Amino acid sequence: MNRTDILNALRSGTNKFDVVVVGGGITGAGVAREAAGSGLRTLLVEQKDFSWGTSSRSSKMVHGGLRYLGSGHYGLTRDAVRERERLMAEAPGLIEPLRFIMPHFKGQFPGPRLFQTLLRVYDFIARNRSRHFLTPAESMLWVPGLTGEKLAGASGFTDAVTDDSRLVLRLIAEARRDGAMCLNYTRAGEIKRSNGDVSGLLIQAEENDTPIEVFAPLVINATGAWADRLQSSETSEDTMHIRPLRGSHLVLPWSSLPVSCSVSLFHPEDGRPVFAFPWLGTTVLGTTDIDHEGNLDQEPVISESETAYLLEIASRLFPGSPITRSDILSTWAGVRPVVTDGTGKAPSKENREHALRVNRGLVSIAGGKLTTFRVIAREALVQGLGEDASKVLRPASKPVFQGTDHPSRPATISHQCWQRLQGFYGPELDQLLASGPLEPVTPNRASNLLWAELCWACRREDVQHLDDLLLRRTRLGMVLPNAGEALLPQIRNHCQPLLGWADQRWEEEQARYLSIYHNAYSLPPQEASDAS
Image (cartoon, rainbow, N blue to C red; front, top):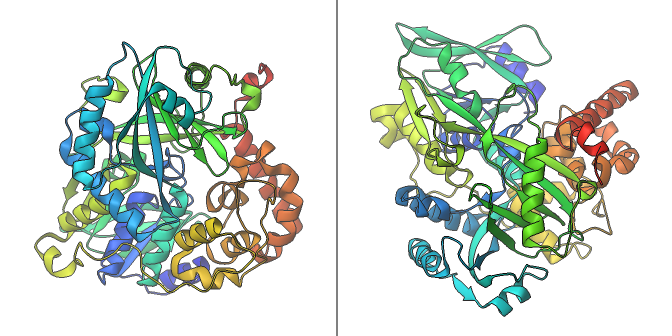
């Protein structure tokens, strides 16, 4: 069923569910996947696009939280490491191992010995040794251009990286195969109660002024930074308090900062670890960690101070590769929904563990990590289902991603691209291959996106706006110069007929997309004009 079919079915009376999930980010998608996989009638609604918020703007790391281990959060690290290992085994191509190099400089804390001790525990939890120590000379071979000033060596270890938005979409596809109805651009409104217990809620599609009432005894509020809004409509003293924290990133041409692994350094300003890592043929610098003061309904934007913060660490790590604002391809900023106790801690000192609140059929979730989405989803469902959970919920040993026999690799597709396609699309890969041309969109670039993927997204992945296609279904707008504007005529030829948009609609969508890019995915105009 496509989006229009689902809305029509809801209006015509197919509106009774076991669970309604509000929020289409990684947590909500994980809840929908576990609920539908357990045979529960499941509806998911997202007020904007799937993964529009934090879940398309994270640091892309599926990691065990080595930093949290250093802070004494052993349980959080244990869960994350085990989930990382599980996800890499279940979805290679979607969750890929990435080598991390942490240079050590004389006089810097933590030193090599302490850091290697942390890595020893990290490897013990994973039941897999990946750590090693590099001499200064070996460090320079691993990371060409790395500063040698006071370099005492480096620690190497392995974590994982993903395309966070594709991970969300893969989870939604899995949920749909098990019967879930999933809607983007559909806002959750008033929660309905009967004798104090949740009985359903009102939802409203972006393009229609008439709300639809759906019925369910359980609503999972997985709206991230918006979690306290749905709570605020309720009369409950036990509400979570969300502290929105912004993390921003710079995207650079790989030629400007060529790294083949993730390189980290503690920033001299605040002691936070900052990374330079390879992603889709580019190099990403991130991340920051500051209070976000802006309107949550608007696209978060990197600030001048954050830009300077990230460029400073690049100049310290790679003094031979000077980077200026004019080198920056794009930026992204995400808002972390951190649950706070209100004691006024520095942003980086806030606890990153997730929190849940239960109020007679309304389960609210916030916090947590990308890596542990399945653990969080199952905990929310256990809390919501109560004593029935053990009978209803599928075993935790069941895979997140369905296995499948993939078709043979076409000769025109490289082995690396083929692994990515299998991870991104799973059981739908054979249909994707038949949906459009198998030629690369940008033949001379490291990004190996195929035209068939854009066609598939337009046919089957709920594209409602052009920015859905170019910022989340694909990342063309973030990895090409000037938002990929030079490629828009070709994209229009392939995609406009599939989307069924008239010429005027296409032109409006193109203007909307470019406006979003310039306002939220590039440096603000006053900064760009000052770029050297």
